[in-house]
Image 1 (cartoon, rainbow, N blue to C red):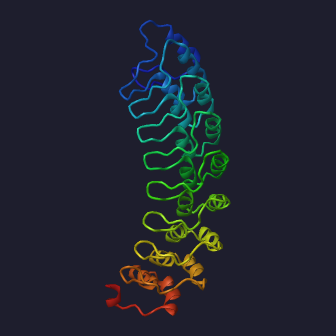
Image 2: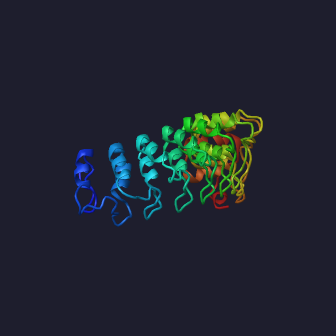
Image 3: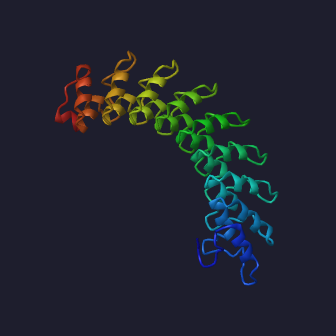
Length: 305
């Protein structure tokens, strides 16, 4: 298969050997994006071709392309542990080199759930397992968001990893796990002593509020079972978990919250709107039926408040 007129065909290592014997062939010539035949071989996991090209002449194994992606990244992002291992064994390769957004290879591997690559990287003393990118997000934050429980466990087992570390929006790994509804990751994080289950983000939403907003009943149930979670906590706009659940029509979550004595069913937000009014504004009939016995009648005048 030809990847471009300036690239070596990514076929068998024997074909590459033949081409390397041709005087006019430049084995390290990049394309317009800065990617070389070696980069393409690494990306596609051609272990033998990678070995051949590394051995052929001088080559900067840690040179990034125009997007800041190095050879090691090409191999690891494709999930190919074999090619990544070859590159990690080279002294000139920096396994913790960030891209132009401050994200490291560990960050991307954690995002994609590449357990083998994460394990290899965590074995490198140069890798910071708790490093933040330009948004303040760590590998643990990304692993929690995408529900990679095994990766979360691996990272939490590393010295120096802060389980409750906030990003630039004050969102923690637990906040992301709650938002995306991963019950396993939520339980893992809650098992850490220094995780605050009711910690609000910059706009005041707690993990419970995030889970309620997106209708994750399992996560809501887990969080409601904790003594240090306030089920009726308002965010910066005065909206509670019940308010969000009502607004988005999550009947199951509304039932769970109404079953709590410490939840005020008709609590108003900063605009004077109650959960019932939010449900009525969106026409969520089942939620309206649940809330009406607990609150006032909804009138057009009240909706316009």
